[in-house]
Image (cartoon, rainbow, N blue to C red; front, side, top):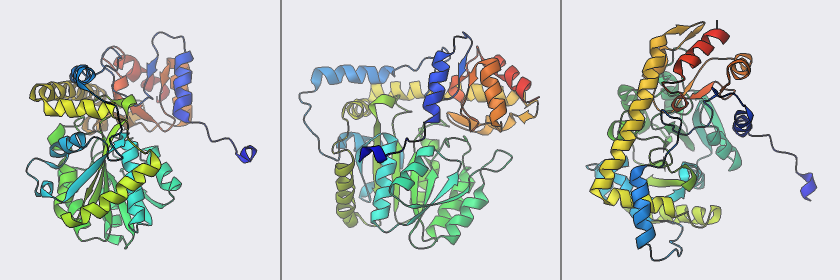
Length: 392
């Protein structure tokens, strides 16, 4: 039976990791793996998380199951940051469960949408590759539209047209902020247009908020999500703490449902819990418990937000330096300064990307996506010079 299986296509990013590790050059640059790095090239554990973990080790009395909903103190502790402290939806229209990372949250959101009657999901492309993989695995029809314009700004006209033309059984999956892989976000004005269009549409909004705090801060990065939720009767939200708490390997996420009426939530969440039970039974506890402890302690919360601010400022400095370089050969880097988060895309063909790797020890995805946090004050000039060489 098992001999019938054909080899799955190799993961290009994993192959890139191996190539980078095998490269002996001391000045090599890794722009492929999507993790934050300091100016020294490290991916540290947040000091606030370290302290929370220390307290967890000394105070945790049991590692018994919590149930498929996970740590509800964690789920509820995040809600003021996601939905806003004064949002009326906090008063009974929102409920959530813990998930294994943002991936688990997207999986539950899309699976629940399918169970509710969604048959087609509109997705701006390019997008995070796992979005399409999850839709194909369930399966659900994916209807792509162009997320970005050639000038490096968001294609608001495309998403607005999709929303206005949506039929019953459609959902629209949107990145809340710090778009992966382009770094191109909708402006506040565009978000309000999107919210108004969704309010008049048959489409169900699904919003993936995976990088809150890495663009302009926790409040501003939630602006688009909150604008939509203020306008629509119902929505699904996928959330990740992997980036903004540095908990990549601990897989910390949350799924939230926003219902028309609080009386609908027991049925909605019982379905979400059943899907979670079938997918992973119980979510991993350690990382979510550490986040809960951070959010319960005013001093740890302040420390976490300060560390997050340091990350955000460093990436903004890198973007500003790239944008200041302006035109480099045939490339114009100016737009990178107005983009947000960990990622941006460079319009380089595969031959130029291969030359960056072979001639300059610069490793990036074949799509042209780069991890902004892989660039430092020590290697930025080398990177810009390499771009001038291959794109001249």
